[in-house]
Length: 286
Image 1 (cartoon, rainbow, N blue to C red):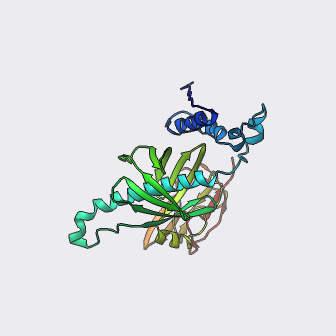
Image 2: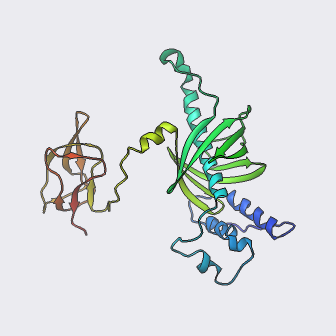
């Protein structure tokens, strides 16, 4: 056991709300914890209404993940948190390049509002941010719903974020990877994608990622043309061995075997055009 969390309040609802906030404030890495699971229970509508039985968990939180969908309020909070962090990180990069303005040109940036598209699984939200005169005060609109947001001094390398949203303190656990931001809040842990309008427009032209079993196949790492195939079906190959030569952007690159194994099928030939993610070679399953 890592910790025992106890909260109190003048009634059950106040104690429950304080417990949700307390669990949101934890950030533990390196070991698995039940923080998000406990928060799923605390934020479930049946738990909030006090409808408890000994079958509560198997009934309302099945292992197949078919529990209730997050509420719009939780999704809006997660979307505005992810978008705000993305915007601030991008602003830091932009600010760091301002000394080059006299050499390469550019503007001082727009005061706002700044618009983004934030994607959550199959849903997308239009989010706008506008500074309210002070660096720590923002008006953030999510799908037309306006929120007053206050931030503390931000240390963007930290993975716990504290925001005051419409006067209520909220905590988020976050992990950043470019446009992808993993957010945990109120028992919901999801990866959100944040794009500026131009990125969102171009994303519509990007091919959907191919779902391929990566264990026994060689995947094309870049678009290009096959110059040479160095193996045939039935050959034994070893990890790191060059199997295919690709030409991309007038440069030749070798694609090596990811595993030791026997070639089952070669799906391309010299002169073929290939796309990122396409299957080049399949190996015999072990």
